[in-house]
Length: 252
Image (cartoon, rainbow, N blue to C red; front, side, top):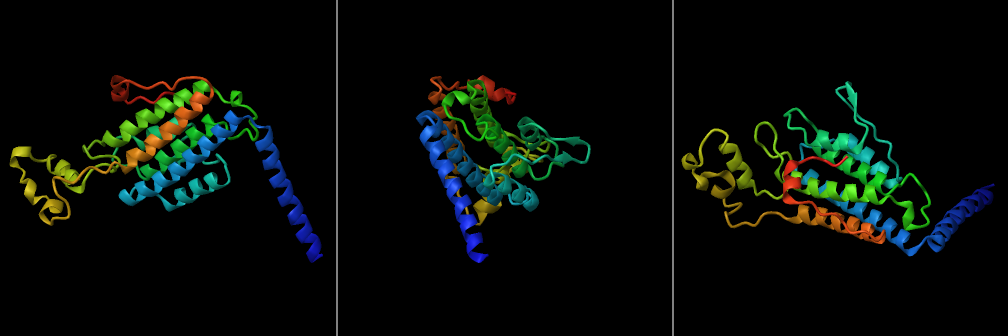
């Protein structure tokens, strides 16, 4: 019986490997490249989420972390959340809009941002369809839409603030800049002693410290992989103007 179980496991494992080999053989080069683009984007998303949680430790939920990791690991899209038991978040734009809500009471913004991004990538690359033999299985309009949304997101993550004029996500900012912004809520710049800001006074930071661009590097890599996928469909990626980015409207 023991040996029979081993043979059964080996058989199904072998079948799975054979299926992968058949898919890789039959798929066009462009389709393989697009599948690889998706995998690389999801790796970058996981890295981004880890960095975001470290920089904004009060802004995520361990329970939602586990849900997202499970969906990524098993290539699923099964997260469906409700807000205050009143309304459901259905589309990826629902999750992204909730992440950027200016209200002070929004919790776990990191999770809603990451889940929204994951759902956008999952839908754009049609991961619910198991076998896509050619690049023509993908929709160029969906890819262009996601590409433009990524550009908007990169801008929004850097500059969006809540009703208290506090940054929704800390990424590029030095700590002294965050302290200064908080001081400016009650004082004018002329009345603030910059040298008395905690991170400057303790010499943990200086005014010459460069901004942290590692977050933007990750999102820029996502944008490049998506641009590559668009080119696989013989199209040119559509870059947004500054005016469009300033409008802060997601493309649905």
